[in-house]
Length: 133
Picture 1 (cartoon, rainbow, N blue to C red):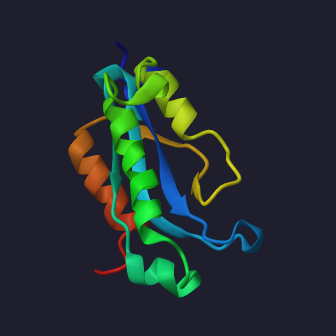
Picture 2 (picture 1 turned 90 degrees about the vertical axis):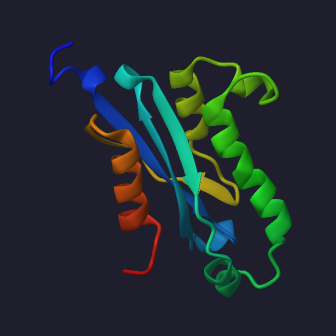
Picture 3 (picture 1 turned 90 degrees about the horizontal axis):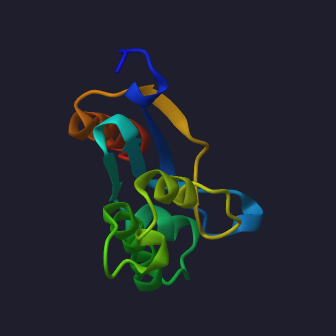
């Protein structure tokens, strides 16, 4: 594989909670990261409940957590993850990042160069999701 081939790039999207879709306000709560060349697909969720509740005090956090938990499960794939979890890895990424008008949405897909994927995931979480230093 050539170092600059499209398959040597990763794609990522930020997972957002949009408590009131009509207001278009959102909180970043995770990242989906995919590198086809490395057969890597992972999602990490870091739900900051106080921030979400500041936008929607009446939100059912338990239901929200259950729905968010399906994202990493679909990334892992395999038995017990439903029909979407049985799709090929790339198809799962595209399904997870498809545009939706629901409480859980993703940002547009962005691209970078594959490397140490756990480090890239950590960097993206720090930059896009976490609010502390």
